[in-house]
Length: 109
Image (cartoon, rainbow, N blue to C red; front, side, top):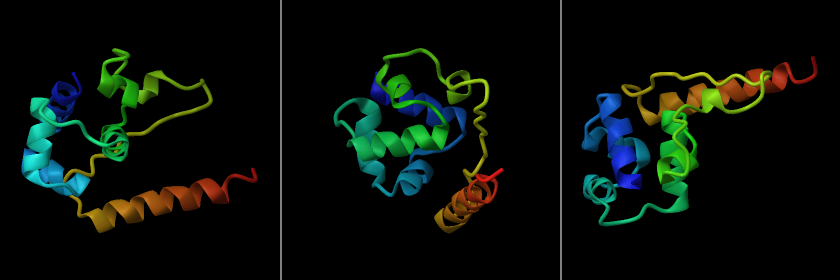
């Protein structure tokens, strides 16, 4: 189930295995083994995959059919998806840092 879900999410984003393995900072062979079900990713990799695709780890594991985190959470919480598939890791980190900066800036309001 886990490997199939990772593969489907990757393909839905039009990412090939090499591109996605670079995003996860793992080898292409390792990703291929995850998708084939021949190897189980660490919890850290599961979290990276879930964060990248904005899904829960429960969805990856087949414990829920709710794919998007937007369906979870309270009415006050909003989750946003950003297509960062063609950005280098450094740019993705800058975006994440900026989001944290804005959250901290408006935390006191």
